[in-house]
Length: 71
Image 1 (cartoon, rainbow, N blue to C red):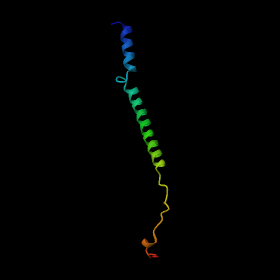
Image 2: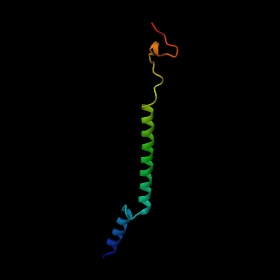
Image 3: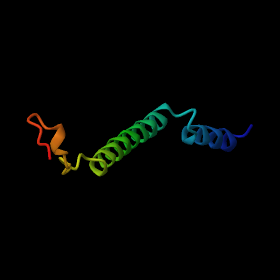
Image 4: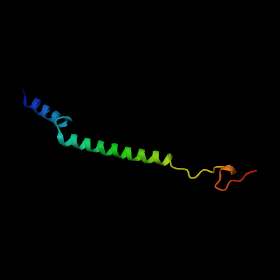
């Protein structure tokens, strides 16, 4: 093997995801941060869109009140 070939193989391994723990761990860290951020933002948006609208206006029949009103 020539020196150039060995140097090329070493440079290729340094750029490879499986051999370079520094770059792969940095990449995985940023992927985790992006996924957590996406989950938090997605969950917040889902809660915002399905928020409680408030008390609905419900018509209650007079004969079911605490003091019933009959005709």
